[in-house]
Amino acid sequence: MSDPGFRHLNLENTWPHFTLTGLVRRGDGSLTLALGAYGETGTFVAGPFAVSEQPTRWHRLKACADPLPAGVHARLFTYTSHTDDPPPPLPNLPPDTPDGEALVPAGQWRAGPPDSLDILVLHEPARYLWIGGLLQGEGTSSPVLHQMRLEHHHETWLRYLPALYQRSQNGGAFLERSLALFESLLEDEETLIEDLPRLFNPWAAPNDNPPRSWLDWLAGWLAFELDEAWGEAQRRQGLAEAFAIYSRRGTVDGLRDFIALYTGARARIEEPVRCASLWSLGETSVLGFDTMLAPAHAQGAVVGSTATLDQSHLIRDEEYGAPLFEGIAHRFCVQVYAAELKTPRGVDKLREVLDREKPAHTTYHLCLIEPRMRVGFQARVGVDAIVGGPPPDLILDEPRHLGLDTVLPESPGRPPVGGTMGQDARVGRRTSLT
Image (cartoon, rainbow, N blue to C red; front, side):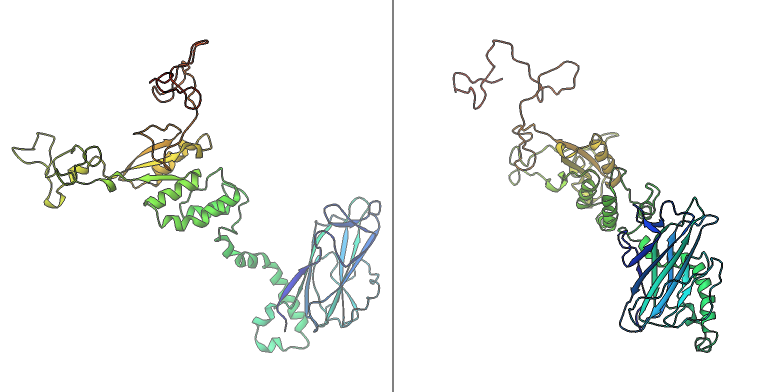
């Protein structure tokens, strides 16, 4: 026995294997009565369709169409055969002729119920299947068909009944049709149940109405914020990686990931306490490198020596040395290239991410790296040593930092103060400190 399956008959709006009489294919790919023939009748015959070399148990034919207005009729026909010879013409039946109830042998047309666009293929198993259609208008409107779906080897609800009913020869077709009636009524519910797993897949969840889409609802389960500026691909990518990012939440790597996700910037995060050490004379006491003034006494408050009224506190033995690191403990510095914050709210968004994702007991210092290389301040090669062009002229009422991005404009006819490397920098003659 073959596996259950289906096929759509309208492929890329071309309706292959369809022979149209009195019908036309519109620009959107739908079939309708030809213009000016709305009061007449149109037909189509399509086939042959086959899925294997063995006789096929055809099950159902469903047409996707606009609702039929009053006076407009449509009827579907099916025909099976063991050969691919063309079938005879469609039977000329009045629109209200009832359909048969018994299984039809191969080589005969069978008419579906009048105006029904979802019918059972009640034929005995055969290799080939043809379908036909009879469309009738009422003068001002016409049936409109968009797609057709053909199912085969469908496992009906008959398999859930006791074997006695499945072996029935006389009432099998009637019982199968009766069960199919209830099955079609619950088809939408079954589809929802079958599609339930995709609702929990960030790559398949619907994203049809943000910020109230199912994808946003799924993100709410993880308390993961989907940025309004993200496109659909970025929303799905972020949600798919949320669980992995949360496993690093509260760490330097996790904070760096969140910054890259929401701002697109690469952050360098430094923790001063990781580079700090106790200073002792003769061991680690290189002036300007590992020497520093202690913010407090290593042993805390000692009565008669280091205790100051209202400014001292006692510590335990295991906390010896902790006061030396109070100024840098639980603090970190975040360095980001200003050029990578491309949006106007880039800095504000960065601070929002830092405030939300940093450990609650920590504080941070945000440093935007700009082209202001200065020896001793910002000159680490590969980190913050960025050479920029000359600073803009000083303009009143505009924010400038004295000594960083301010310069007095040159007066006309006055030689520039100092030399410019590559232009006028003769040592001892045209060079001077500015």
